[in-house]
Amino acid sequence: MNLSLFQRDVVCTTLGSGSRGNCTYIGDGFAGVLVDCGISAKQVFQRMAAVGLGEATIDAVLITHEHSDHVGAARILANKLAKRQGAPVPFFMTEGTRDGLPERCVPDGIETVTAGDAFRLRHLDLECFPVPHDTRDPIAWRVGIGGQWAGVITDLGRPTALIREKLRSLSIAVLEFNHDEQALFDGAYPWHLKQRIRSNHGHLSNAQAAELLSASLGESLQHLVLAHLSGENNSPEMARRAATDVLLGRGADHIMVSVAKQGEALQPLRVRADRW
Image (cartoon, rainbow, N blue to C red; front, side, top):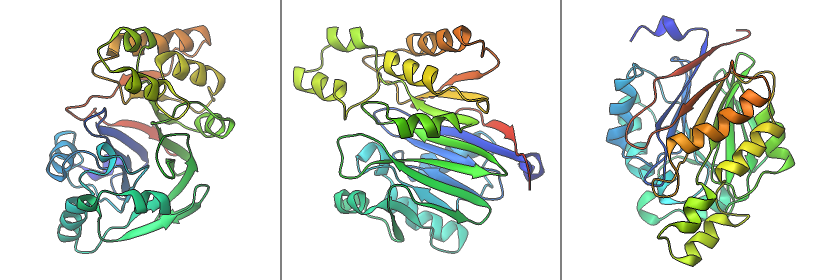
């Protein structure tokens, strides 16, 4: 990979997204982070290489919550990153998430944060903020590079004023479009699981995500990634229709819409940084 291509670009790609594993890379080729690590360490490296990011440094892993589809590879990934890069890599998470980690997933190098923390790692600005989900202390993350922000906002049962504020700041937004309400209602899931998904601490439906997008559409947004789609209760077509209807209605058809995939990485999305 020619890293000079990324020198002034914020780069974001979902390496995997869905109920079987979630992982997103955000960086610029010289410094970068993973948000969650719910796919295998082997797949992390293979998928990054497949989209031209095989040489990109991973300076930290930002964990949102303790569900295995977000932390399943943490222990193995920590070991492989330390060996690959010659030094331990910090795994940032809240105390609640740390305490809730499955034992098999606990990595070396845990650094605890509190929702609302903002700090700098190399030339990356990192910020976490609370989201409503049925775990101990869940958060979402946004990453700033040269005045541009990319963020991952998934696994939330309802929008909040703070989420709307943070979404409005993003140039690249990875946003949950989990399920179609009618498909979930008509589907084969047991009732208690349907109720959990539909709850205020579950997952966003296409309609809820579209409403959130409409209320939070900022001037900075260039790329929207529809993420964490249910394989049973949604489809890329339904999710994309919900998002594009909002964008067309708001005269924002310049925003590129992508649908994250479970089994492969998206081609990297790029925005030009404002400053260096």
